[in-house]
Image (cartoon, rainbow over all chains, first blue to last red; front, side, top):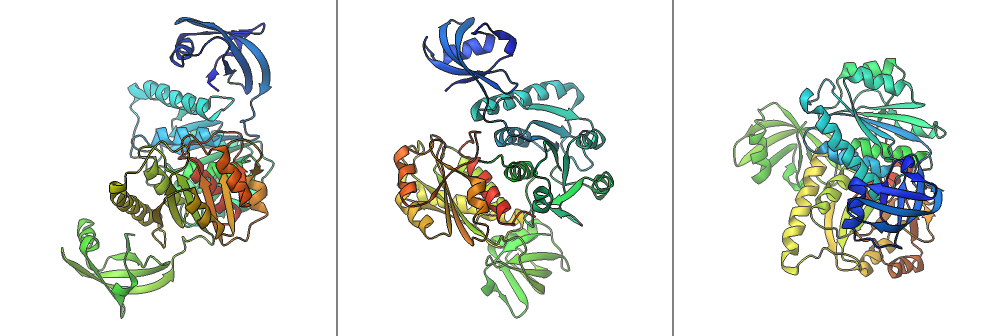
Length: 245
Length: 245
C-alpha cells in the first residue's frame, strides 16, 4: 500500500489534505478514488486513508483507521559515522533506516579523508534527508530518521553521553565483545553506535571513548568496511533488544 | 598487512612461490624484500610470510608463522537469494562475505524479474567470484566464499535440507521470530538463509518451505529491501551463535 509522510496538522476531522509533492505523487501512482493508502504523521502514528479526490495540486482522503505504526523499534538508536568517501553515506542512510535507526549523524574525525565543504553542507543535508525519507517510506517506518552533521568527535561524544548505552566500534587493542555488552543491556531504551571512517579511529580517539566509559567494542575478527559496520552493529542491537522479529 | 589467497600446494618447505596476478599485485603494492604479508590457503590457514624477492612474473616469500585464520566463524552459513535486478548481486556478495557467509547461492524463483541468460552465466559467475575474493581479502577471511547459481527453488531447498537450521525469510502470514528460532539453536554448525527477490516469495513457495519444516521467519515489521535482508539475517545468525565479537 502506498505510504506518505505528512504533518499531523494536515489530518483534521477525519480528513487528510495532501498538497505539493505528495499530491503529485498520488497522481504519478494513478491512484483512483476509493483506493487506500497509509499516511504517517512521522511521529509513529499511521492513518489508513481512502482517497476521495485528487488533482495536480491537492488530494483529499478520508481517514479509515488510526494505528500505532508497528515498524518502530522499542529502542531508539543514534547511529554516528565518521564521514566516508563518495556515496557510501547514501548507502549507510538507506540501510540504517531500513534496519531501524532513530537518527543518523555524520562527523569529521582524525582519519576522515572526505571533507564537507561549508558552502555545500546544506545541500548535502537536504539530499541525505531525502534518502532517509525514501527509505522510511519503503520500509514502512513510522518516523523519518533525521540525518544531521556533527562538527567533531566532541559533539558526537556529547550526544552519546545522553544515551543509555554507547558503543564505540574499534578494530584493535582491548575491546569488549558486542554480545557480552548487549546481553547485559537488553532493556535499554536509547543507544548510540559510533563507527569510524575508512581509516578507522586513531588511538587517542578510542582512549577518549574509554575515559568517558563508553563500551569500546569489537565485532569479531572480520574487518568490516566503514559502510558495513554501522548496519551490522545496528542489526546486533535490534536483535539483542528483541526488535528483529 | 597485504593479504593473498593461494593454493597450499604453492607453499612448500617454508617457502611460498607466487605467480601470475599475485606476483603482479606484489609489484603494484611496491613491496620490498623484508616486508611481511599474509598468504592464506583458502582453507582457513594463514601463513605469515616475509618477502625474499619479487619481479613481474614471480615472487618468493619465506614462511614466518602458521596460524589458524581467526576470522572464520564457528557456523557455516549458506546464504541463498532470489536473483535481484542490476548490481544488487554485487552488494549482497560483498556484504555477506564481510559478515561471514560460507557460500552464496543465487536462484530463480516465481517473482524474479531479473533473468540470467544461459550464455552469460559463466561470465557472471566468474565476476561474482572475483567480488567474493576481493571482499574476502579486505575483510581478512580464511576462505573465499564460493558464489554459485541454483536453477530453481527445488535445488535451493535440497541444499537447505542438508543444513542444521534452515531459515526461510517471508514477509506475510504466520511466521516465527528470528530471535525465538535462533536462541533455541545456538549450537548449530551449519545454517541456510533463504531470501526472496524484489517481489518476495509467492505464497506457494512459502507453503513448500513450511512442508519441509524450514523455519519461515520474520525480521520484524520493517520491510527490508531484497539486498538488505540477507545481510541482516546473516548478522543475526552470527550474533546469536557468538560470532560477532
